[in-house]
Image (cartoon, rainbow, N blue to C red; front, side):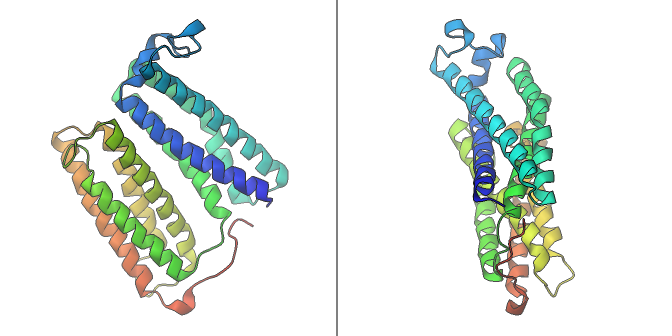
Length: 274
């Protein structure tokens, strides 16, 4: 794999994660509604430029989305032309094929702003992020057991931070806190995907598979991110904090499993994407 392709995959993953966070801020601040009546245009000059700060936030989100979409498309084409590893190509192609539906859902989000559409929009964005992140993980060397253990300990800290930031439980869940919540959550989700992938190479004397438990943990974290902006009170709030407690527990289990693994079973230096 060429360094150029590896760098493009990394940049695509960063842009996609940043776009999700920007989208959360845009929706939470109500900026998406400023251009609702003229989507895909806006409220400024010729309908192409923003007229106010709120409409600028929405306009800027669309602009970054366009750049990210073209970046992902170009990266996928380059991966196919270079004959990258099959699982890298599959991950990128899966993410790219979701782009048209994500564009449509983005427009519906602005025009209707219903929770079903918002959830579908975020789930699709999460699937795209998952595909690009997995492609990036496949380009990296398999870490040492000690490194994986440290990464796992990092997920414990991330899960604890998310629990403290549980929507409308301990803090006011405004646009800035929401953006922080999702930034932390996406970092944790990416780490868990990596641990689940690299964990295949770690032999652990336990009936619990590291790949299984870390994959389950990633699923719980994704659930928290999907429902995070729909939590206001009642059952949803209880479900959110319960899932947060479960997430902390699962990350601790992952860390304990890695701590228990024998040093002699660690794997070094192999690039998983080639």
